[in-house]
Length: 231
Image (cartoon, rainbow, N blue to C red; front, side, top):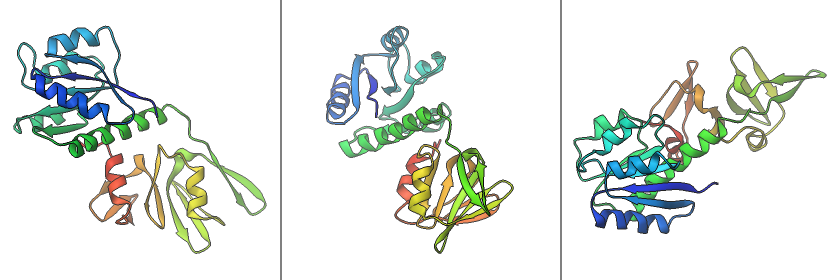
């Protein structure tokens, strides 16, 4: 994975140092600048591209929210603040996470892992998905990967479900998983793989795609929730 180039924006020196220290312990995260307020950060961002901002909200001259509003194409943002009351407004701007001070390294890492997932998904979205070819009778039929909604296990076979058709193929879940883009598809149960952008609704136990109820396995739930771009 590419290194996440990051800046820390906070008017409290102690908070800046904590964030820089935690980042230094974390693989693939590099703090390239430390800014004391929103104005300094705005000037830096006008000259340099970054992937991630660790951003305080309440700062003199320009608040963290105002900084986000001022950016035409803001990078990913993890808000780090001592105030709970800004959370609802903050998530209107698609921030990655909202971390309350004081926080420990585990909470910092959880936020960074969310940013990593989004970063990887965005990189993958720029690449074409490889099409699948399945044998139907004596012919090979092409299935565009974008047409696949979910895959389910059926004994020694798998069933590839698309908008219009179902294809029964002699293969394993592990085998088909290796053929699908890990940026677009995710295993959610030992018997199910789903395409993330086809999910319509979900709760703690099930996913719904085209009125199909798909169970979420306990060992897969955490990874699934981290992959979702929740607001």
